[in-house]
Image 1 (cartoon, one colour):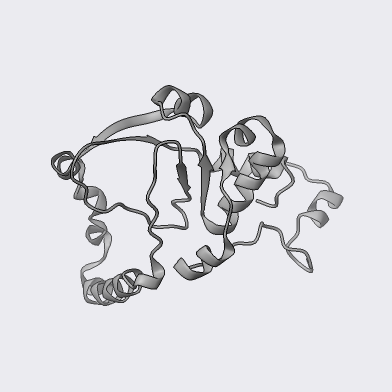
Image 2 (cartoon, helix red, strand yellow):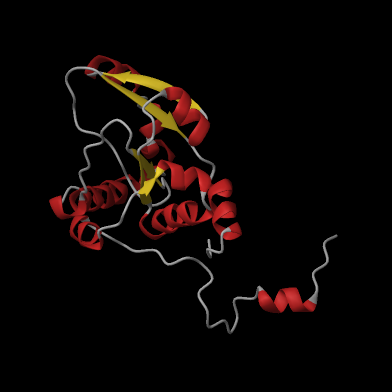
Length: 188
C-alpha cells in the first residue's frame, strides 16, 4: 500500500496547472538548429561544474542532441568521463554490413496482416519526410568532439566511409539523465 499526502497530490496534479512540468522541447530542423547556434559544453565544465552539466542537459533536453568538446580522444577518458564504453568499433564498410541486424529492424513482423498495406503507406510518408534535406543535420565529428543523441527523439546515422576510424559508443540510461537534470533544477 502506498500513501500520498494531500499536499503532495495537489502539487503533482496535472489538473489546473499553469506552469510547464517538463523542460521545453524544440521541434527543429537543420535551419532552426544552425540559427540557434547552440554551444558545445567543454569536457572540464561537463565533468567538474554543475553549470556545465546543466547547460549540457538543457541543450540535450531542448534539442535531443548535445555536444561536448575537448574530450581526450582515448577509450579510457571516454569511459571515465562519459560512461561505460559498450563497444569500440573500427568502422569500415565490411564490418558495418556484418553488424547490421535485419531482425532488429524488422518491425513489419509485428503488424497484423490486414494492416500491412497501411503500414507501407505510412512508412513511405515518413521516409519522404525524413529524407528531405532540410530535415537532416550533418555534423562531421573530429577526435575530442562527442555527440550525445536522445534516441527517444532523434533518428541518427552515418554516411558511408572509406578508410579507418575508431568510434566509441556509450549508452546513458534515460533515468540517470532525467534524474540528474532534475537535481540540477531542470524540469525533466
